[in-house]
Image (tube, rainbow, N blue to C red; front, side, top):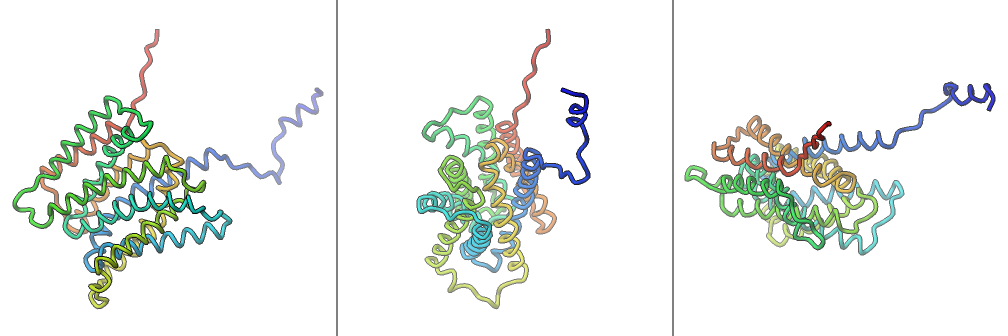
Length: 324
């Protein structure tokens, strides 16, 4: 090879050269933005739900937010050429939507009529405990490692402290609301695993849109069955509740749930579950700063145990190699 050809091989790009984007770098930034959405936005949705249910019926509010957000996302994706889901994909998306949105989110929304937003967030922080157990019990599942069992035990102790009530709590810690929150975490864990391992639409954003539509429609049917529309008084709607509904629809559903749907396929379950110890911190701080919510010392200890349990279960320290 001549010297001239070598010079050509190493010559700098010309003025008209356009640098090619790095797919790995772009994916990394997408992950950072998606995690920021589920960390911060979802952490704030507990407060928004608490404000929203002050004058909006819970299932009607939840159903409308997901149907609106799902419809917007679905229309955008179809306009961009994403293929329409098949009937079987709609069926599988409906199962995930019923578990994560109709059951899990619906129960949280109803429970926040009776419990403070910070307490609701702390109960949901235990979702990784449910995920570890359900992932083991599913067909082909793997038994949890020792540190996961330790995390489950510590988290269980924290949950017990949260469940314990004192006489001064009154309706703020109603037994029915606590049961609803416990079931909510279990349903969310089951829906997350089903969404991850089930044969959903190849485009994860379309799968998220389907889940929002299916889950939202089911919540609206629950609202109709329970007579919520008949009890709704337009004159009693507060501006704060309407703003909370708008925030839940656009930020909590359209942005954050879409980000979660993408991360289910793009990231790992361990990384995805880290939101369980970020969301409660955001919720507790916002509930204290904006709503004046307080936590009893016993509840704070329980919260600390749950967060520690999730950290033990999800954070893997690099192994040290002995140098000779």
